[in-house]
Length: 304
Image (tube, one colour):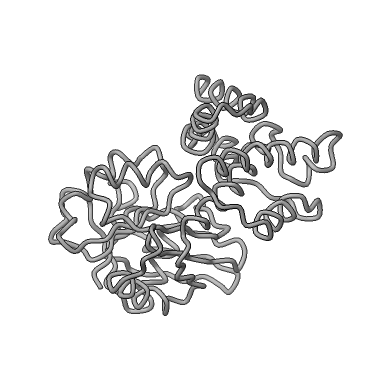
């Protein structure tokens, strides 16, 4: 299977590297700066098991040739419009597009551009970041990759995707209910991002502060009410596990949005929090805590 990995940051770099190591034909679509970095130093993975360096196949938007069987989109959500332009020449009659982005707005955006039958569901769970020299740093052994048809019909096209991905040295989950997985991932990351960005700290600091647990539970409840109104079929055991994970004061956690914010980078405020508020308004739901978070993030973006 010919695979195009749009992006070679922490997510795209890690999972693309694992696919390449498993023998898949993987090309990384990257910008000029990342292209030069990877050309010079290779794709470096620093994992709990050690350091590995790969010589990746690279392309830039103006050098893409031919169509790909699978395009995995791993950029930040605010870069999606440009990436859609970049990947368009690589989309052929049989191409499937699997976005691994935060939130859910991107699914409709991709479907409108490339057609509903081309876009499949995907998400990952990994604690990873980029180092100062562009190396991919996997901070814990967690490396899960979920995928499946958005309507649950994992037909022959999806079976081919599974055959390519399942032996790539990561924990793969071929799901027949990927939409619930996507809702639950949004519940986790948006709660985590909201409380960390609002309180400017990790979950351990928040939970051991006066009112911190109440804040976290309140944000969680607001988000759960929104996604349920939008169509999430609540799985109580799954939502209880998410809240339990977030509420453990022994485990300090932060979100990628919070880490970007503390470094002065652009953040996915509209995609992670703003879109929840738009959906809440559609159902006349009161979300005062989410509104406070959104104002906080907007002020940050104005001050950058």
